[in-house]
Image 1 (tube, rainbow, N blue to C red):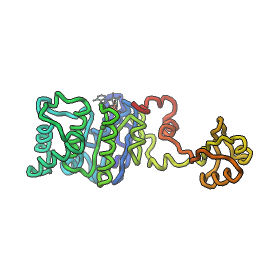
Image 2 (cartoon, protein in one colour):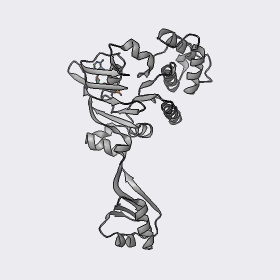
Image 3 (cartoon, helix red, strand yellow):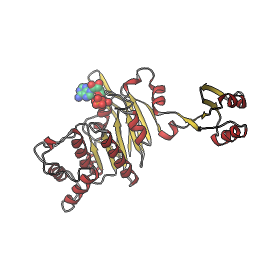
Image 4 (cartoon, protein in one colour):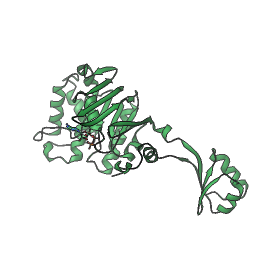
Amino acid sequence: MIVTHALTKRYGRTVAVDAVGLAVREGDRYGFLGPNGSGKTTLVRMLLGLVYATAGEIEVLGKPMPKRVAEVLPEVGALVEGPAAYPHLSGRRNLALLDAAGRGGGRRTRRRRIDEALEQVGLGGVDQRPVKAYSLGMRQRLGLAGALLRRPRLLILDEPTNGLDPQGIKEIRELLVELNAGGTTVFLSSHLLAEVEQLCTRVGVVDRGRLVLEEDLATLRAATGRILVGTPDAAEAAAVLDGQLEARDGDRLVIRHGDPAALNALLVEAGVRVTSIHAEQRTLEQVVLDVTGPGSDRFGAAE
Ligand SMILES: Nc1ncnc2c1ncn2[C@@H]1O[C@H](COP(=O)(O)OP(=O)(O)OP(=O)(O)O)[C@@H](O)[C@H]1O
């Protein structure tokens, strides 16, 4: 759905995006993760033809960008940082103007599509109040509604949960999962590890303009080959395990073993009471720390 090769953008001496080659596949919920200033917005703008690349290539929906921008954009819903709206007009009126200005999306269906989009983002009950009276979160939702008007095949969203409270973030997450289940591919940028971890199926990590990692989340979080066991009989368990025990902290044990069920059976058979047992998984935070090294606290773990 999106492929870039050696995509580069320089602003004078600043290399905002540095030879990035990423691949977003159909059906992905792709999280483009990086700290503030790492080049996410610049890359998103290049994908949409809003900024020209210094070098490299971009394909969106199988077509070169920005050359085929007029064919590509009607099938893409986009939300770029600080969505623009006419402040003195209502949200509904803004969406009508946006729809009229773009290609595709017939006039006959406009009202229905606007109602649907507002409903989807939780602005169904919105009144005639002008956008200048909206909260930041409401503006963000309106921006998303604009992205959904044409029922796009691909959504490209730059920090879509900026300005939303935890409940709003959860609602947007659920909406994106639902749209994705209905066939929409989702590409979003974020500086929040937790957001990407909770929402995405695939992640690209960008650090100082370079893509340092791109992988399916399930692969990244694959089991480590260790099992975490909680037991009030830690000493007995340690005796039974003979050499497989990696660490012990009170009644919690870390055991080198591949199969929690088999390990559980072994412990129970030996008379060890097991209160909890599960395979250890890496967190996205650990993976990101591994690839970016010290200074990765620039990534937001949560907000
Ligand atoms: N129009 C511009 N002119 C000069 N430098 C720019 C311009 N736009 C971005 N940059 C620089 O390029 C780098 C990447 O910026 P960018 O906004 O793409 O990062 P980001 O990851 O989206 O950060 P944020 O989340 O804060 O928006 C930064 O060093 C920024 O100062």
